[in-house]
Image 1 (cartoon, rainbow, N blue to C red):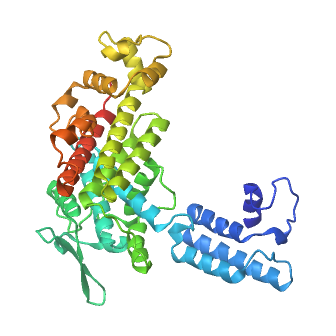
Image 2: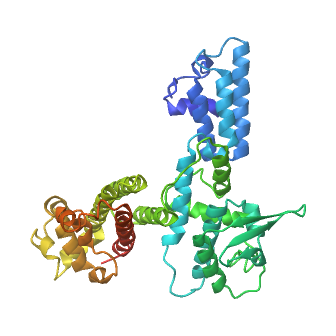
Image 3: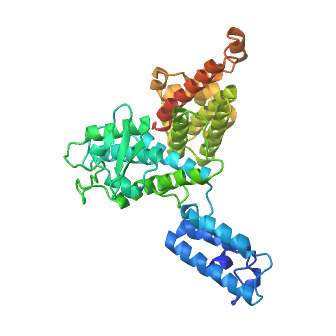
Length: 430
């Protein structure tokens, strides 16, 4: 498999046109690590460990017969492979920060998913509430999957100091603190339950009925989000507990200077963008701008944060106006937005004209025209994102940018407003 893989890749000193046997003297340190990474993303942990161990022993053999490249240092390679096997889901590809980032998106995936108005035939509402409770509990406690599915309702305290009591087989116990978000999610789920099952999490499926949720069930919940968000395939439910251990092992653990509320909102907006129907190029630009806004907030550059939040909103509006279904609807409309009508609503190159000839004010007016209820939301309106950085604001309220707490509150208020505006704009259909 290693020989096949290294030849097909064609970038580690071998060409796909070469005939076998391949010369082992061209095996490189980086190609063995890359093979381990590929196994970590595409095969089970046990397969990864077995195959990489075999390749390493083969390299040891090559050294004994003088056929190993001098570029390969077995001691260093052993250390790097050991680190890769220590955290097999990393597969040598994802750093801890990337895993943390992926887990935040998984939590947001179930946070932004809309609850069905009624239960429906397949219990979609209670399943979504359960899934929210599961990922929130995994994220805030780092509880193991087998421990999670074994938890009973009476092991959970959802009062002011919310926690889960874990009872071990040797008679000991441990208490895990729940975040406010996890507490709210679990309360919503349990309030929807009408069964008498003592288990905290129930299957609610057609086949398993109301039996206790299985370990496989938890893995499937996480994998659904991984697939929908196109996250790295190596991410799994076990990473929630693994990232806790990695943080303990790291000299410099992952730090997030944002408040839990701000971090949650940034993640929710990114997931809404990721799942939206706007074109990929506008989606990626908006997500990049959102990351810049988050960095600015993190270093307390709040004016820069608000500027970038405005850029995200502009991208969301333009991306929405350029959606194929929206363009078709505007062309057929008897009452199109004035700014777009002035461009020639039936022009064959209408999307390019919208993109090149309109600006923030035109996007805002067009969105208000197409989605009238946007103006009635009890949040800062679209125009406030542009007004908040206008020079006149410095003149009328000179303390606003010098007072740390006031400006931080303003940035957080804009962030909260953007979450609601993004939700209504991105889920809208003509």
